Amino acid sequence: MGTINTAVAVGVDLGGTTVKTGLVSKTGEILYHNKFDSKGDQGPESVIKQIALSIKDAIAHRGGGEIIGIGIGAPGVVDNDGYVKAPPNLLHWDAIPLAKRLQKEFDGITINVENDANCAAIAESRFGAGKEYPDFLFIIWGTGIGGGIILNRKLFRGPTGGAGEVGHISIDHEGPLCGCGARGCIEAYIGQKYLSHNTAEKVKARPSSLILKLVGGDYAKIEPIYISQAAEAGDELARSILTEAGTLLGVAVGGVMNTMDLRVSVIGGGVSAAGDLVINAVRDSVRAHVLKPLRDDIRVIQSKLGNNAGILGAAGLVL
Amino acid sequence: MGTINTAVAVGVDLGGTTVKTGLVSKTGEILYHNKFDSKGDQGPESVIKQIALSIKDAIAHRGGGEIIGIGIGAPGVVDNDGYVKAPPNLLHWDAIPLAKRLQKEFDGITINVENDANCAAIAESRFGAGKEYPDFLFIIWGTGIGGGIILNRKLFRGPTGGAGEVGHISIDHEGPLCGCGARGCIEAYIGQKYLSHNTAEKVKARPSSLILKLVGGDYAKIEPIYISQAAEAGDELARSILTEAGTLLGVAVGGVMNTMDLRVSVIGGGVSAAGDLVINAVRDSVRAHVLKPLRDDIRVIQSKLGNNAGILGAAGLVL
Image (cartoon, rainbow over all chains, first blue to last red; front, side):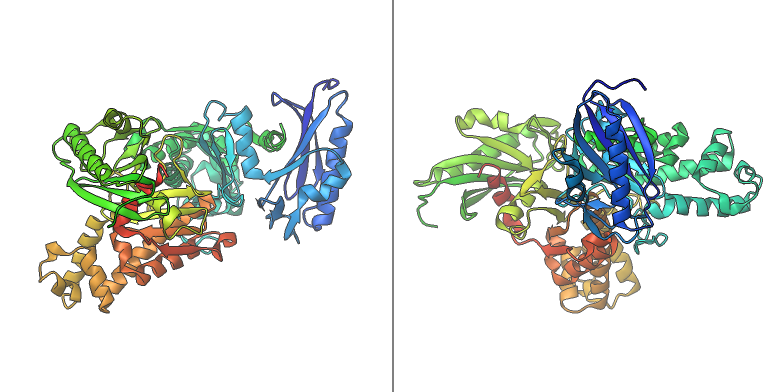
């Protein structure tokens, strides 16, 4: 990376294990980035200290670039007053006004905080797969199923900042019990833990599957990345599992599209990296579940930004 | 009705069989109203003529009141250019720019057109059960299941005007086939036709139910009004059917609330008139299906305006 001589935003991607911070140009280039331990198991004070360290390090690398502002993507709900509430994997953290807490260390610089899935949605809207679509539903398909809604190129936060929680849409009122206490949540079918578990059961019935080879015969090690790899290599069981998972996701996405009059969904997160097989399954299923006036216009596309979406979307909060 | 001496909006409630028009004050009083045959089976020209007649009749009764504007609630999707598209029960009607077509007859008067479920949502927001809630999901539970979304006291139309179509949210991806072609749509469980049919099946297994007496022993005559009446009289089968229907509706409503960060739902339409039994069932089910941060704030309430919601909401378009 050469010397920076353009205005940059600081984008912070806060997670349970790491905090990653980047300097992002107005056109969405990451000109510098770092990675710190977030100390998510040591309580909020430690985490806030790590965030500050990470931001200071990035700012120290700004060269001749002016700092436009600091954007932070955090897990958990971020309410209208900037409180980050009950972020999963950040222990002993109830509700913290994160921007306010950091402000005294970065006097005079605008700091905005937003939920991480919402940040990723913003990133796809400004710099990624959603660039040409003013309105879309972004889905992040990983450990859980999260989402963000972009309307007229802006994030739709809902009345209190909690919008986009699509993971607990029930696709079967008599379906499997989800960790949230309800039945048939889409997350309880295709969230990483559930998908891995269900796949292990299926592999037991068909141990010739490549999936089992990829995990060295250890059923407990089965997770989506191996299902994807096996599917890419043509393993039939893996392909049918991912197709079914995409089909189920499409049921939930279709309901959102009907309700909100949307036609486009951008799918990100680890499982979506499996590519066309999954994306096509979601698309076919969404088309089958939306009303006729929407059907022909349905677009389901893979996210473009991968792991950079967090930093880019956070920077997008102040760009 | 005495002589009118206040400014009034003209609210038109267009349906497949009748067109009802009222003069509505700024405070939501209907000061005059009429009812014409809509001639929905005779093609758009006849319908437009009937609407014009109905509006003219209302305006002739305005007394000393100034006409603020004309609002029309129509079945079908109303797009951003004011085209009313494929309204059910209005035959041979593809897409008509209804306001434009009426404008020459009512020169100088603002005419706005909106989908009828959206109009009813507006009415509940301005004058009814949603008055104290800036954000809510309105459900109309009748022949079909429709809806309207109010955000910050305004109608959320979505990108092209189709928002609020909650009837085809699937609550079981392997559920019964719906008229729309998908499986498990909430409408395929509790829309009038489906609910009546399912109830008939249950009554056959328990012919001692009061429901059967209310329809004079004719299974084909079973419909929600009789289920409600039987439930009110304490009939156990009827009570269990309505409770189950409300529970199923709550699954779909819960998904919308999670996605859009809403906490309040107003339930209107014929079946909701059954009252507390149904409303409580919906509420319990919504609470069980939303995420924890929403749970305590969930409100599910019965609509207040009944059959007047159409006229009031249409008037609300120009008030």
